[in-house]
Image (cartoon, rainbow, N blue to C red; front, top):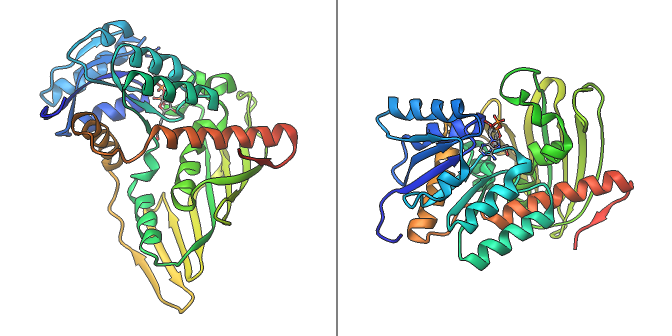
Length: 338
Ligand SMILES: NC(=O)c1ccc[n+]([C@@H]2O[C@H](COP(=O)([O-])OP(=O)(O)OC[C@H]3O[C@@H](n4cnc5c(N)ncnc54)[C@H](O)[C@@H]3O)[C@@H](O)[C@H]2O)c1
């Protein structure tokens, strides 16, 4: 596809996240949508109408095979529920499509391995939407750490707590079952696992505990705490919840020379060094930049072989950490990763 200017995409799954991808694709130069697919044709049609309003011609279908048989489609975005990722991605790879798959990559590490192996065998590209890497607050924190502002980081504490409402975008009924989501850690916190990994590197061991205090409609936890020990000696804590009245999506990264704190909801990043230096670091509002960035990276990988900003291996590692945490909960012990 070298020389091609814009990657023609098929969107599979036109719900909350698929809709976001469609919205951001309208203003991308590297990629454009040609077909929107959803089992619920009205959702695909809504994407088509939105694209038409921006002057783009997109067709709607409820048939995945129709997307995969379309020779114009160079790549697909998979934004279907978590439990479908493996099968939909495999079908797309078999059909010769390059694939951008939403997080979590799959429900199990074994499925991630199978997907990566098949993509490799077929010579296809597979990327996973670990979008926190690109969200401006998190990208700013990563940049400060990489620039050495706080010296070598040795601890991270992340809180991702909210009260998930019973209506609105997170109410899709598939979300209430572990068999569909993987659990809260797959559904939400593969993001935080990936962010922590992107700063501290690989994890050596994981210990976790969880419970369901307030959400009888879920067959999995509504509150979970995970501790991580990184191979570089660093320590991490994640607290995640869909049961807290006061939401908090903040974090603290501590290094040998100082600390960085961020507050995602307030779009703020600041650091204080041991020598007393302090700074509130300006952060651009994300406003869809992160989704544009990941899709643009996928398109440039497919079209020009530019290295992607996140890889399938990153998606796989995040699932591995979720799986290890659930194993820790089930077996009431610390899990050492292979
Ligand atoms: N990156 C992020 O921050 C982020 C945010 C939200 C959701 N997600 C991920 O995106 C995925 C979708 O989540 P959502 O919130 O959009 O869910 P959703 O329920 O709003 O939308 C999913 C859509 O997929 C359709 N669908 C299901 N199976 C299908 C199939 N086989 N073929 C075609 N369409 C099918 C459904 O009809 C539905 O419209 C999930 O994996 C979720 O974890 C990622």
